[in-house]
Amino acid sequence: MFRPLTLMAAAAFGFMAAGTPAAVAAIHDGNWSVLIITEKGSCDRAYRYSVGVANGQVRYQGDAAVNFNGSVAPSGAVNVSIRLGDKGANGTGKLSATSGAGTWQGAGGAGECAGRWEAERR
Figure (spheres, rainbow, N blue to C red):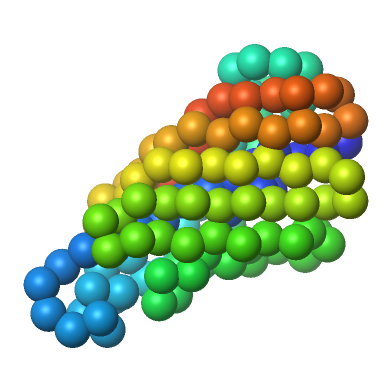
């Protein structure tokens, strides 16, 4: 079954601060734990994944074979997309220095699903 959290795990991270881009990136760079919660559809109820943020790029830190792309804008806005074969999901949200939240939607073996995600710095 497709794991929306994997694609959301991606699903979480941004940064904004005065100064150089390196200083801005440092605010959210690091390790995060992301909880993906299904609120609509019959996908698995929840997943927790580890993700990393470096220089505005979100990277899944697990071993699943997924195509994951994610980024954070200087405002903290998060955009992520995950694909596993013909299954996939997209997520949006926002990070602060220590936490984040947003929503996701996608389609997997169980049909279309949607929900929310929460992130915390580790």
